[in-house]
Amino acid sequence: MYDNKIHVLKNALGLHTAVSRVQGGKLKAKAEIRVATVFRNAPEAFLKMIVVHELAHLKEKEHDKAFYQLCCYMEPQYHQLEFDTRLWLTHLSLKELRSRALALS
Image (cartoon, rainbow, N blue to C red; front, side):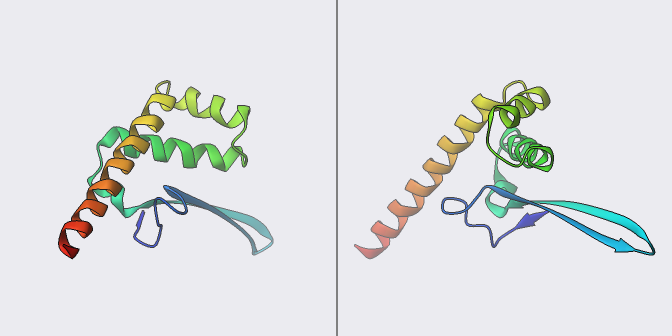
């Protein structure tokens, strides 16, 4: 699910939530992943990296060795994709800043 409330550069690339509740004497769990709207127009590989990252958070809460091992297990090119994604986001940010500067001049 895409979420336009996620501010990519300040907060996160995506969010994961898990809700547990008792219903009829049974524990029900629901997990949801939300991805920043900017990824709607991103290369598919970048979206895949975000999904892998958020899926890994469902099992590993911290950004520790186990977390990154799980990411690399799901996507062997995870570290390269993360680097490329952050480079692409920096490009978008600089492009937006340039557009604003030109509009003001």
